[in-house]
Length: 248
Image (cartoon, rainbow, N blue to C red; front, side, top):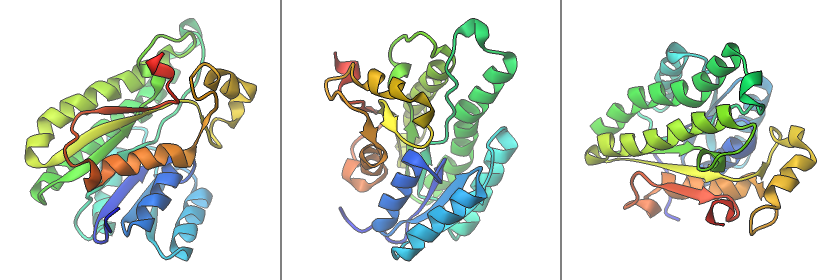
């Protein structure tokens, strides 16, 4: 893959799991990665790991609970990127599972704040700036359960389904200005965040042709593909990386 030196990427949820794997892979290509997350400890460790491997990285601590936090993150990323962000990876997400009647209004607000509102206002801030600089790439991380009904996943799945639609809308809106917007739709993936699922993760993965959970690096490969020029003619697409689950 061509060297991407000179570009800056902002990766939300970039201090663990899929986000961290994507940050490391982009840094290996020469991209200056700005990783955002809640944990200063994980953020500093991620940055240290990337720098020790010869990459360029910075950390911004944020909880992405409202529009103002998203706008502030975008501002800091632009400053760290010397006036530009070329790649945005909307990876941060929370996934409480449970029946609809067990979810509270606070649960609803929290999930939609992180999974929908934050990406919305990050794009609002950064896509026009990308267009001013001649283009850019935005990759949204969704989920396979945005594509089919699953008991216990109404809140999480619906929030990511909104992001799937936004991917298409933003491609139509910003694509003509050179900003490509696409999405990656992971299946069950083994990360620190999904460890709480225990055997449930393997049981869910067993329903797909691959028969196993993905690694964070496997999902990150798809993100990096859509974030770089190798996917230069792909706009508004959602790439399933789910072991074939949504194909059967």
